[in-house]
Image (tube, rainbow, N blue to C red):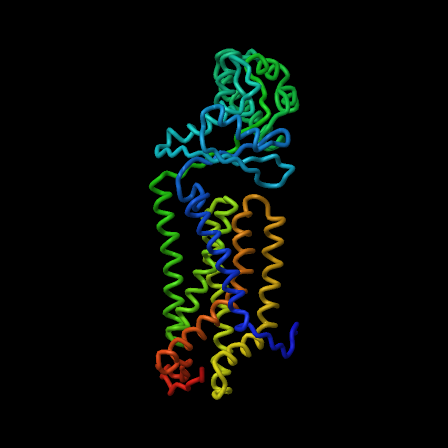
Length: 405
């Protein structure tokens, strides 16, 4: 299947338009990283506390952020995640704790900041553990079990049933204490209403990343990217010529810079999943570049008397249909993931959407012009232009053929 047959587009003739396009987006990203938003690292890299909150109603992130600011928690990040109907919010704090006993520090501060309808002297049933409920029931003994051996296991089971009903049946948030009548004895429910109230939210989970762990993850992410670029340079230098490896690495660096710049411009956090997407794009962009390089190598053998610029143009046109088909289908897949994958996958899918577009574009508009520009430079210096070597089946190198510049 082919979308295009016998195309004759002068891609190299439009190289200055391509260069202008790349410069605009690259410089915009660099300016954002240097002066505006910086590189917005997620909690995975900078360290901090993530608090997952579920509401009984549709949450307003800006109102939640204002409540947290009034409580004295600065630089909090509030964003919705999951399906819209789940009413879930992710709150990120720059609280960097390192001990297990401090794990609930961020949870307690968020709880205090969000409890606008708190009742003095009462506990919040939506954010209370089964242990606290059991201890209260043992003290009040609403079932008149006395202090015998039966009371402790009975109230332990009742407390656990209440928490399970809240978390599993009601999704973590009770609308009222009266809802518990289907899960517990009416006497227990009446007793709970004397010492508990129900807020409009429930804290589902708390995650912390210490500063040392964040620093280590940041270092590993940088090394993983550099190792992948180095591996590409070595492979392409051996497979073709070192200039082709350099061209591919510069192209991938261009793709990565624009993708990270897009995150900076939008002020979206870069997490571990985004790094995974970027590493995926490095391989994807490299694959497209190698397809074009391979066709250039084949045409150099067939069109030895043609100028290298003409050979490159012809090679790009010959692979254009394959490039559009492959990139188009992949792009539709990641676009669906971005539109319907939810908040948790937003960063990952956005990196893939941007990267596939830029990676496909750069294989045509960046990598090939770098080769031609280098060859022309060598010609101006009076040096012999480098053509692609022909590799023999046993790994030996056959004599090189030279292309005119």
